[in-house]
Amino acid sequence: MSIDPRFAAALADQITLELESSIAYLQLSIALENHDLSGMARWMRLQSDEERVHAAKFTAHATDRGLAPQIGAIASPVIDTSSVVKCFEASLAHEKKVSESIRNLYRLAQEVGEIDVIPLLHWFIDEQVEEEASVGEILGRLRLVGDDGSGLLRIDDQLGSRAGADAAAETH
Image (cartoon, rainbow, N blue to C red):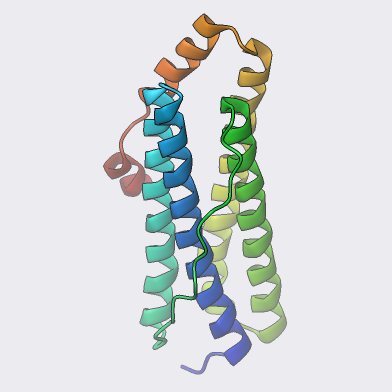
């Protein structure tokens, strides 16, 4: 089946962005370990794993349609990790970037008539709404507790109890 070259390129770019997201979350995980917040670090590692699953979903769609997407250059993330709030602000900003990229992919799919990808993009649009809401809620809670150690430790404990990537992959 014929695929519009602009769409094929945009799909490869999305795969690269998902992998970039995985690396950004891994960097945030490292930073939170250095803040002695192992629960938040685990949450970020699971986010990193989930982003690789997302890249794999886009890759599977591309290869199922006869494409061989080329992963683009991935720059090292430059993230202000000086505070827990800064880490989650970076996470939210990155999720918003991914959301907009997926919306642009959807717009392009409509423009060039790539209807076969629409169900996959609907799933990703729903996923991004959920991701932004989740990170936004965490960020709101972190801003509420401020520098209160017991509040931070409680949020850390809650985030550390998140189900693992295997469970997340099964539901996606």
